[in-house]
Length: 122
Image 1 (cartoon, helix red, strand yellow):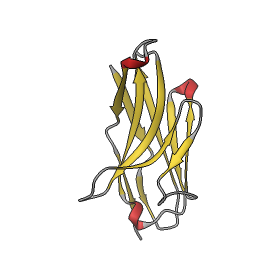
Image 2 (cartoon, one colour; image 1 turned 30 degrees about the vertical axis):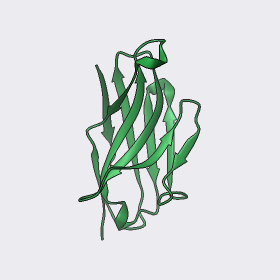
Image 3 (cartoon, one colour; image 1 turned 90 degrees about the vertical axis):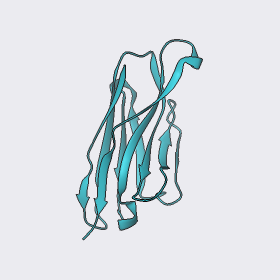
């Protein structure tokens, strides 16, 4: 079984910064793309940022220039550095990973973390 454990959420004032971490553990062959999603109250879950195994990344337009995604493949960990936070960034942030069980790419399965609350408020 694979587990994704997030950390780093909390309460921050507008303009502040937070860094989220997500570590994967368990038995698997490798982790492919990893990403962060968020879900604000009453809204659908949306992609924030995603990074491939090779290091290519993409971002939601609303966070470009403020958020940076990175990963440490040796530690099976993905990070989200969030700067210049705005009240509209308030949401539960979820880690996501495409985990491949063996050498066959068709064994990839999508896993989710439990979520971490980020609240931006004065």
